[in-house]
Image 1 (tube, rainbow, N blue to C red):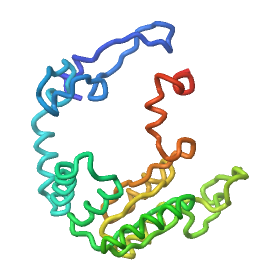
Image 2 (image 1 turned 180 degrees about the horizontal axis):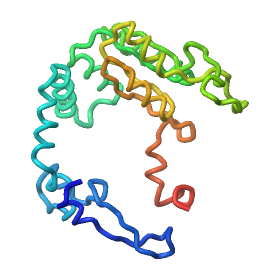
Image 3 (image 1 turned 90 degrees about the horizontal axis):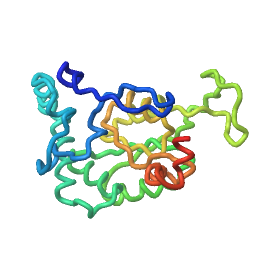
Image 4 (image 1 turned 90 degrees about the vertical axis):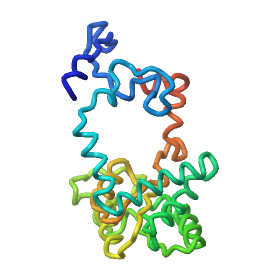
Length: 230
């Protein structure tokens, strides 16, 4: 954070501290105008974009041209948004994205609880001409005690999720793009960390909301208010 931005830090009432003042550093998530997008409104005084040093903007911009894959990904993603805005599903967009970055082989890293759905996704990709190779999260069948988890929910099996091995297998198969389907929170982080190919997410797991985590956010000021903020 720059000194300029630090000086614009706002103080707000903190309910958790019984009305005492609590320091809150304002950032993009607190913006109500998003003037950086259409430039038709005013910037808030804590605008991150307006307070950035020039060198960090230049450093980030240079990275788009530092590697060919960065250029391909940036252009493919932006062009798909432009060409098919509100027309294509995310499933269709992943196939378009793979095509536009020149991918021939797609890897799927899936939760075993979504194997059926993953088969449908693989069928779709194969219909589009891609070679597909998938790995389920329990591959390797390592007992959960290996990571120190001795008490296991009786609804679950003993084998731990193994996102690192999933990534290693797809690396071995030399996939060009890896698609995540329903990996657990955190396991997806490990998979992305060890995946050599670019990775994108098709399905985000939410066992309560039919894999639609934004549902809780939409209801945050309604039915879910007490559950989330009590």
